[in-house]
Image 1 (tube, rainbow, N blue to C red):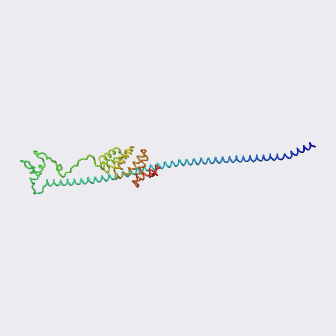
Image 2: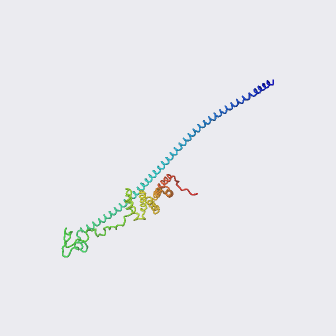
Image 3: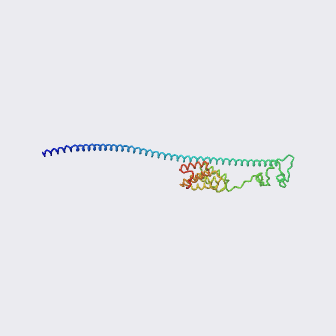
Length: 337
């Protein structure tokens, strides 16, 4: 009996203990299933995020490429604008020089017309003097009828006749006698008081003639010849108003030859010594360009600004503004704070 009851107890214990074990296993399986589902969902989410990040990276890279292309395009446009501004500045310089040359040519033509008028007036005066002299000679050779020549008057036949000789008549009166030498004065002009007296030759030609010749050679691109002629003008007439223009052209020739330092000195002569000269603005402009060409950028900028401040409405000031804009420099200097 005891053994039977023990067996029953064991069976009952086993029967009561079996269901909880099965329930625990089932919950574990469900939990593992849920964990697996969560892991799968996390993996899918990670994969989706990776794909989206890849797309974002591609978009960012494309935007970066577009920005680089735009930057290159902007740089190219800036270079193109700078080159166009420089080209326009050079053309404006050329036009300004041509206008100045035309003004010089016009001045030269006016001076030549004045010289021609003076020469014509001189010719007319000489012609009048010659006509008056001829009339006096005709009156002496053809006296009025009934008039007898006065022996006391010089030039009469009786006054010039030698003693013991008879005065000749007709054509023989005009021939020299064998005993009388030729007179010291041949013709009425040699010692005539009405004959013009030649002026003494000056040591140097007039400044206007020197300037015209030098400018003509400069316009014909004979730079070395015109350089020596302009140099002769400033040496012979250092205080003449034309010397200021001569110094300007000396600077232009030095600039063309690449001698910027010497050109700057010539431009300074125009600016400092000839305050009323019309080439002061363009001298400022070309001096600034020469300074920039010599890698003296700040001094060139100061020269451009001085031109704009001194002659704000001149064409040269407009060129200076264009140069400063092309260099990326403000038109006025910043004041120190």
